[in-house]
Structure formats: structure tokens, C-alpha cells
Amino acid sequence: MKKNTEDKEVKGSDKGKEEELGMGEPEEKPVSTTKWVGFVGGLSVFLLMLFSNSPEGLSLAGWRTAAVAVLMATWWVTEVLPISGTALLPLVLFPILGIADIDASAAPYADPMIYLFLGGFIIAIAMQRWDLHRRIALNIISFIGSRPRNIIAGFIVSAAFMSMWVSNTAATMMMLPIGLSVIQLTKTGVQDAAKRQQNRNFAVALMLAIAYAANVGGLGTVIGTPTNALMIAFVNDAYGMEITFAQWMGLGLPVVVLGLPIIFYTLTSLVFPVRMKTLPGGRAYIDDEMQRLGAISRPEKYVGGVFVLVAILWMTRPLLEPLLPGLSDASIAIFGALILFLIPVDLSKSQFIMRWKDAEKIPWGVLILFGGGLSLAGAIQRTGLAEWVGGYFEVLGGWPVILAILVIALIIIMFTELASNSATAAAFLPVIGSVAIGIGQDPLLFAVPITMVASCAFMLPVATPPNAIVYGSGVMDIPQMTRAGLVLNLFFAILITLLTYFLFTLFLGIDIGVVPEGLSMLVN
Image (cartoon, rainbow, N blue to C red):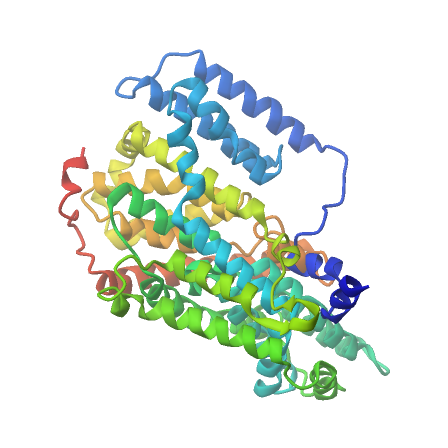
């Protein structure tokens, strides 16, 4: 009975929280033709490459790594296996094919960045267990206002802010039911054709705003989306370059701050003009939801305090290094997570802020995907495959740097429309890094923008989990998402290119046309 009482004190059922985190059991579906084609096609090309001679200038290990990369990329795109399942292939194939031993193949699955995400996930689950995330979102929406355009702006800011600290999937799942309830308010009363069109525009703009803001908000911090940490871990492993949590915020926040108004303008003025003056019951609904939450609880205060403490430590770590030279962003995240298991809510019931039962809901698949991407990227780098592929892109050396960045950004965005952004980053980062060095540029000059644009695919439901979630609401169709997404893809490719060239180069100390000392020997 004691256990049941504790469970009831948690706001919402465990099943509800799993759904909110986007980690419930997937619905079983028949195997699609796409999966069969991906399975047979990917395996056939893989075997064909294994039993053919390696090209001139590429080692046998490099050629076999290319075969594994093709197999993994094909299976990632077609989802023959769960994406995280495909990420386990290096553990089996690399030792068998002589690419790397099991120790080298498995080491990336325990990269420090994975523990940064592990700690971040535990803190996010604590926020969701006690509904702190919902309180934050509703307060932001309430503060911005209840006019239709203001409501959309409020949802954009809320989704983006939440996505900086929890997964974009969880942020979208949390905002979706609130958004759908607001949309229901537009369906009251007698409506003519013009009114119905305005309501449709508002509904579509609101749903897409949630997804797009969650995608972009994830760029604001290292833990916002796995691609950020994947890139940081890659450049550290491959080139010995360190980017701290605070430094990444210096890169990501300008994209978020400038990108959110672009999303708002594109959706509410350009593609789906929202001209409604009032939303019946809009303010009342938000106020009612806030009243339902009640006064802020002690557990919410504790979680909020730990969250703020961890964020401050992340941002001030460079100042603390003289006193604590071994301190890292990952250890700070785990420190915050451990505190949550120690803070009591009710000692008489042995109830604490976090239980391991809650932590079991961590999206372990994301961590495995992260490790698999790093393992593949490491092999591509070690075997010389990256330099070999990079040699075919030497033509970019004759282009203006800003144009080369833009073209690569557009290619990555379009590729990500059909594949996981983490998988895209894992496949392209080693190649793009070698391309940069091969044409006499700092690898960060290309690595940072392609990492960011990999999270900026807005056209198709399959591009990102937030896109798929809002599409599943039934509020919009694919042509509507494509219309808005195409415009935003172009806007964000240009925005990130310009920020890279004029701001990131200054912030990271990148000299255009100069390979950092120590990497020049890698120039072909």
C-alpha cells in the first residue's frame, strides 16, 4: 500500500509520462516495401563492396569501413532496424572485418558526452515528474498574451526554451495537448467561409510553430539535441578541439534568438496569415490550466533549484577549472542527477525527488545512437576514408568560402529531410572535416554549420520527431508542412551560413583560409 500511495502522489500516470517523453511502445505495423528495399539493397551493396577490391589510394580497412557506412546509412534512412539497433552494428562488424578491435569499437559508446546526456535526461524526467516543465510553459504563454498571434508567439518561445533543456520530442509532446485545446476554442459559434479559413490558418500555424520551435530551440545548448554533443565529441576526438557548454551556447543562442522570429513571421504572415483579432476563451483557458496546477510545490522548487545550479555550473566551468581541474560538463550533469535521488519529499514514506523507476524511462536508444555514430565516425577518420572522400571535394577550394558553406548547408538540410539528424551528422562530420582541412580551412568552419542545419529540416514529417508528432495531430497535411518547411529550410540555411562566416569565426577564433596548427599535416 505504501508503494501505491507514493505512485499516486506523482502527478500523472507512469504511462502518461512515457508518452510525454515520446518513449512509449511503438505501434506495430506491417513491414513496409521501403524497409524490404532498404534491407535487401543495403545488404547487397555492403556484400558487393566487401568482395570487391578497394579503390586506389584507399586502404582495405577504409574500404570496408565505407561498406559498413553505406549499410548503416541505408538502414538508418529506411529504418530496416530501429535506428538505435542499426547503431549497434559497429560492435559486430568492425572486429569481424578487422577495422577495429572490440575495445576501440565499444569505447565511443561510453564517451563523456553520453554521460552529459544521461544526466540531462534524468533532470528532464524530474521536471516532467513534478510538472515543472508545464508550469514554465504556461507562465511564458500567459506572460506574452492571449491574442491569437501572441499565443503563437508564446508557444514558440515556450517550446524553444523547453527544447533547450529537454529533448525536442518531449518538448513537443508536452506542448501539443495544450495547443490542441487552444485550437478547440476556435470552433465555437457560427462561422462563415472566411472565418473557417482564418481558423484553419491559426491551427496550422500553431501546430507547426510548436514543432519548428522545438527543432530550433534544441540548438541553444549542448544537451538540446544529440547532434550538438555528437559534433563536440567528434572534433575533440579527431582534432583535439574542445568546445565547452558555455561556448556552444554562444554559438547556438544567436541562431535561436534570430531564428524564432523568422519562424513566427513565416508561419503567421507569409504562409498561413493569421488575422484573427481575438480568440474566444483563450485567456480563460490558460488561466484555468495554471489554476489547475495550483501553487508551486516543494518538489518543483527543488527540481528548479537543481536545474538552475547545474546550468550555472555549466556556464561558469571555465572559471572553476583552476580550483577543480578535473571538472567536466558530463560530471556536472551526473552531479545534478545524483542530487535529485538524494533530496527527500517525504522521508516517512521514503519518497525522493527521483526514483530509479523514473530514471528507467531514459531514452536509452538515443544514447546508443550517439555511441554508434561516434564509433562509425572514429573508424571513418582512423582508416583514412574521410581524407580519401574529401579529396573529391577539392573543387570547393576554388569557391568563395561563404558559398561553399551555403551549398553544404543546403545539401545537409535536404538529406536530413529523409534521415535522422543524428545519423546525418554521424555520417557527414568526418567527411566534411577532412574536406575543410583538404581545402585549407579550419574543420570547425564546416562542422558547426552542418551540425546546426541537420536540426533545421522542416518540410516532411519524417525529418524530425517534432514534425512527425504535430503531423500526427491531423491538423495539417503534408503539402501544408512542405510549403512552410521549404521557405524555412532556405531561411535557416542562409541564416546559419551568415552567422558562421561573420560571428562564429570571431567567437571561436577561426581564421578563414588557415588550418589550425597541428592539423596542417593532414592537408592532402
